Length: 228
Image (tube, rainbow, N blue to C red; front, side, top):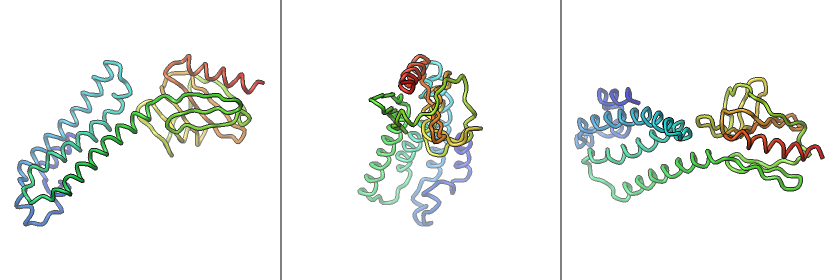
C-alpha cells in the first residue's frame, strides 16, 4: 500500500479516472496536488493497517486486528476518492456526484455489516431431531444423518476456501482441507478442541468456539442425542 503511494506520485497516469480523461479535461485537473494527496493517503492507509493491527491485538480485540487490512483499505480508499474530487476543476454533474457518494457510503455499510455478521458466533439449537447452527453459513441437519462425532485437538490444514467467509482465525462455509477434502467449517477460534461431525453420506463438519467449554457442551448435547 505504501509502495503504491510512491508509484502514483511518480506515474500520475496510473490514477484511475485521470488516465481515461481527454487531454482537454486533464488540463483542468491539479495533477501535482492530486498525486501528492494520493501518495500521502496510501501511506496513511498502510501505516493505519500496521498500527491498527498491533493496537487492537494489544487491547484484546483480535477479530478487529485480523480484519484491519480489509477495514482500513475499504474505508481509507473510499474517503480518499471522495476528497480527491477537489483536485478536479472540470464542471461537475451534481446528481452523478451525489449518486457516487451514496454508493460509496452503501459499500462501507455493507462491508462493515458483512464483517460483523461473519464474526457473530454461531448458536447451536437442538429441537427434537433437528440440530441448527445459526449465523453466517449456518445450517440444519437431522440427528439421524450423523454417523460419528468426536473432539479433536487439531484439524487438517486448510488448503483453500471454496465458498465461505474467512478472516483471521474465523472460517465459516466450505473449505478444502488436507486429507479431508471439501469440509463445512464453523470455526470461531484456533483454540482446541474441535468438534468433528461425520455424516452418513461422508460429509464432514468441523465446529469450535472461543470458549472451550462451549465446544465441549455442544459435543455432549449431540452425543446424548445420537446415543438414544
